[in-house]
Length: 271
Ligand SMILES: *[C@@H]1O[C@H](CO)[C@@H](O)[C@H](O)[C@H]1NC(C)=O
Ligand SMILES: *[C@@H]1O[C@H](CO)[C@@H](O)[C@H](O)[C@H]1NC(C)=O
Ligand SMILES: *[C@@H]1O[C@H](CO)[C@@H](O)[C@H](O)[C@H]1NC(C)=O
Ligand SMILES: *[C@@H]1O[C@H](CO)[C@@H](O)[C@H](O)[C@H]1NC(C)=O
Image (cartoon, rainbow, N blue to C red):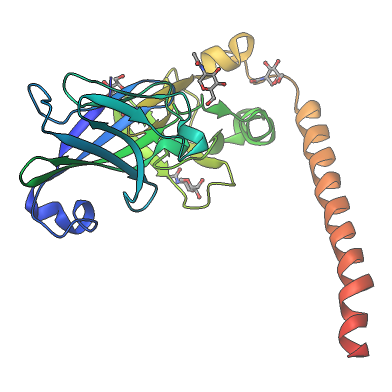
């Protein structure tokens, strides 16, 4: 179900930059794969009307569909929109089926009778967020120790994307949150736990159209050890994992060091 937001004139900085007039631009948030219909608001198209639908990622400047003398024409101006655009002959409304991220942008209907009226839409297609993942390694290195391991930290990660945030909650209260502009890197957020308890924590990934939750509790993640002095397996396993992680990091560091000292420095001196 697309989410529709009407932009009043106070939001024109954000919504109205592409139009000189003070008409409204409707912002529509769509879940990837869903259909979206952009309505002209007309009851019925008549013979004297011509309606042109324009689209562009930043400016609605390319003709993608029109109706003229009651005849609908769809243009393959954008490869991404090919075979996904429909225009209603009755109302002139535009429908995009099976939306993808590349369909985000500005859509404008130019409705020409004796005068020209405009209908503008800012469509933002979001993919649903991925399920957050509770990282095994952080559990192992901190929380799986004996009682002495507290306070410890549980790391939760999720794929990044436009408008995605990642948070830890307990009983509806947000304990920590992160988001990041660099979409190439996954998001991670730490939960600091002071002591072992029966509490259930939720790691929630959210964007404007969806959210997904992965719960964390000691009961669930370490059922057999919750009430014993040993916690989530032996300390030995934890130490081994920490050691192998450290060795991995050391190897990577050495390789980077080798590459740096091998190539870059010499070149500088030769110049
Ligand atoms: C929807 O589009 C995607 C590519 O964006 C394609 O892989 C998929 O098959 C399409 N689904 C349908 C039902 O047309
Ligand atoms: C750690 O990961 C493995 C496989 O990915 C999984 O089988 C195991 O249950 C995880 N352990 C914890 C404590 O989450
Ligand atoms: C919140 O998460 C950040 C990033 O993962 C971490 O540096 C910080 O210690 C966390 N704060 C709390 C209170 O858990
Ligand atoms: C998650 O989405 C549901 C609707 O699917 C909504 O009721 C809830 O408030 C959302 N939670 C968060 C933390 O955004």
